[in-house]
Amino acid sequence: MNRYPDYYSLPHQSLFQAVPPNGADPVTHTESSLTPKFTTTTHYAYERNTNEHQPANNFAGATVERKLDEMNNSLLNFLAQYRLHEEKTTTIEGLLTKILERLPEKEQGPPIDYKFVSYEEVMQLYDTYSTNPRAFVRALEILTYKDQIHELSTAVNKRLFSVNRVEFIRKCLFRHFAVPRNLQDDVWRSVRHSLDMRGARLRQMMRTKQITGFRTSTPVSDLLEGLGYFNSTTEKEVV
Image (cartoon, rainbow, N blue to C red; front, side):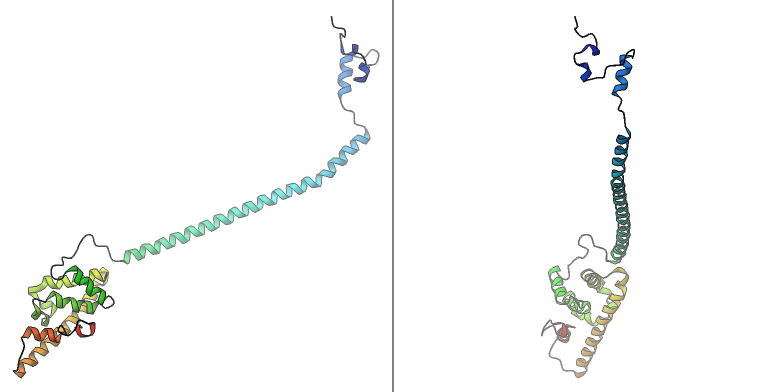
């Protein structure tokens, strides 16, 4: 059996809860006693404490707002720089595309049959005259026609029986000097004129020797001597 049937039967209950007045409902009295009672002094202290923290709260809110604005501005600046970078990249890619379009096309496989002059000999000539395509062609012509040296005194366009040799020289010029397609006709015209001028000089030399009536050498050796073939293969003498 419970010694204390209710809360108010506890010993020293007055230490925990005020005794309800006579005739008062114990439950109602208990609930009302648990509700805090603010006096004027207590309410003033609460308001003063709230007002003291109000400036600090406003400062914290302003700081957060300023940080958000800075982050927003940084993001906008980053996006602007990114767009500018994209525009520059697009411009550079367009320029590179135009440059690549102007470069000579890479030839696939061996486009030239080096049957008249070996590839090694052609490369040796190119190393010697890498900055002078006209001198390169002049020296290559001598090697190409070494077994038909008399053809050198004939104009290039009139070499009907050695068209394949002329085409070989032409291809070597375009290949090793990487001549663009849109410039090939002009470059070949200039080089061909140089070969024709040398052929005219050789014809004049041969006529001069025939007029004198005195010959100690063959016509072929005269041509080779006129080309400087016996003396040296330097650019000055060959050209």
